[in-house]
Image (cartoon, rainbow, N blue to C red; front, side):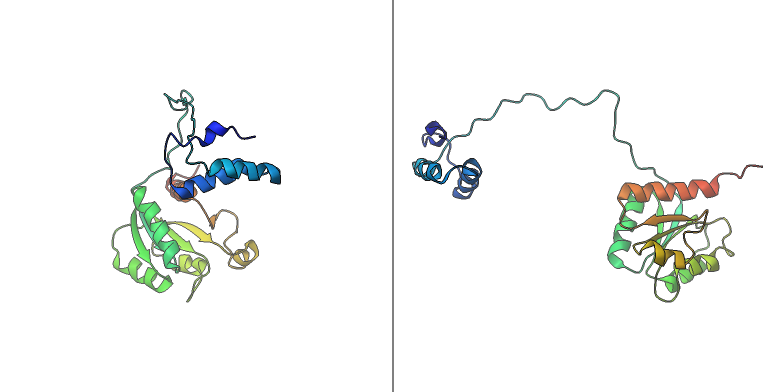
Length: 200
């Protein structure tokens, strides 16, 4: 039996919807005959709920903190034909300190790169897009900007990406979907790899 004092109507009042949900959880899995008796008790009025007193939150592990996403201040040319994906990626980059040049496709990217006279440190591009692939776009831009890093991203299968030559050794690639932290770390790795001096 569910204790009758649980349904004592002399205490707190609760909305009907909440009562129904709590009653359903309390009676779930009980024998049919027992549910009839419990339903009769519920109709006697609102009930009170006893919760343990908590004075402090959970203790944090000393010396352990959640790692922060790496940040930067470099200029990133973002090329993504899906507007929703482009918006999310732009938001992540903005929030991690980067300056973003946003292009909806390869044509826009080529135009932006021509008009932007300052350095572009990273080309962050989708692989499969209208007009041309991200790999072809990179091949067109790199001769004009030899110090620019490249990071490819795609939601296509590995087989489809391989056809575009993006999984060749030494090429930075990020598989969609990805978390904001994974994106921030991939961007930082691509930039640091390009900026680090080659061993002699």
